[in-house]
Length: 307
Ligand SMILES: NC(=O)c1ccc[n+]([C@@H]2O[C@H](COP(=O)([O-])OP(=O)(O)OC[C@H]3O[C@@H](n4cnc5c(N)ncnc54)[C@H](OP(=O)(O)O)[C@@H]3O)[C@@H](O)[C@H]2O)c1
View 1 (cartoon, helix red, strand yellow):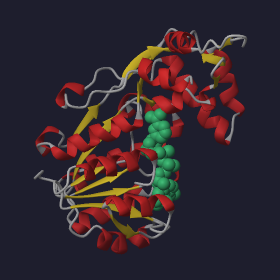
View 2 (cartoon, protein in one colour):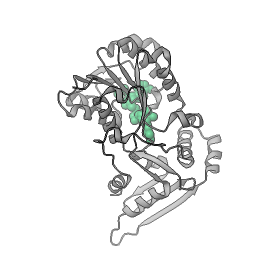
View 3 (tube, helix red, strand yellow):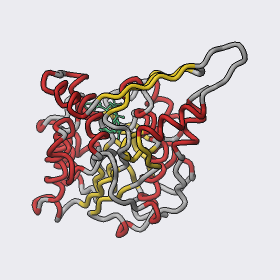
View 4 (cartoon, protein in one colour):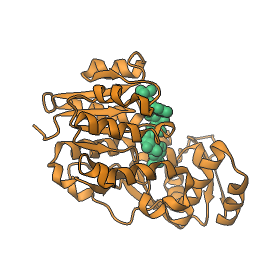
């Protein structure tokens, strides 16, 4: 049995969280308990995970300072807490950390799963809320009582080939607007693969990941190479005309857009800019630490996308 016997996942109703919980439950008896901490145990997804064997514990809808004692109660007996909480809850992880200390949790995985924050967060304000969480976990106050692991994986493959990243894909027609020159590489990883990697970390000797940043990389490509992959996968149906349109938006133009962008567009432009500036590329990876996790290549993913 792994050293971490009772695993809790907060935000576990997300795509990555569901994949993680399902993976942890695959080997019967390997963990004592796989616990979903959710604001809504009656949601369809919570019930599905419970039916598979996850224990569900309801947490308060506001993860405020006042909720720390109740959160600590929900974390009783937990060895490792994995947070895959969505962007709206990133700052509230401060309270989850204090609740974890109170409850005697051994390891905390904050909700990150993106770019190299130490290197690039200063120029990407959208990811800023993750930084104080790293700082708190590294602080003397917390580090002596609670271990941490930070997981980086670049961009999610699913998100990259989406309208949010300016791709319009249907079987026989594709349109893409590329950020920058299209020649800058970016790291892309499937969410299900990140979940498998996380599960392996939890199964393995805790020393391998104790107080470390682990970089997991599914694949890497430039926008132009991604364009090529989709172009090659384009379906040719007799009698149906295929079309592929490519446009480019320069870094300067994106920077200009960012000056007035708000809400959804503010997030989108920063993430596009990061790909064009090379900030989406992991400098190296730790894939070899867990060789059983064979990541899905971008080519494999795209082949399933254009159908
Ligand atoms: N690298 C990439 O390309 C990429 C892309 C997207 C996301 N991410 C990262 O992946 C992680 C998960 O993101 P996601 O988009 O998958 O999450 P999400 O679906 O927005 O949210 C995940 C879960 O968190 C809980 N939650 C959401 N907002 C909350 C709040 N304000 N307070 C408390 N709980 C809240 C919900 O669970 P319950 O309702 O069950 O409580 C929700 O199902 C984040 O760290 C995000 O930054 C990375």
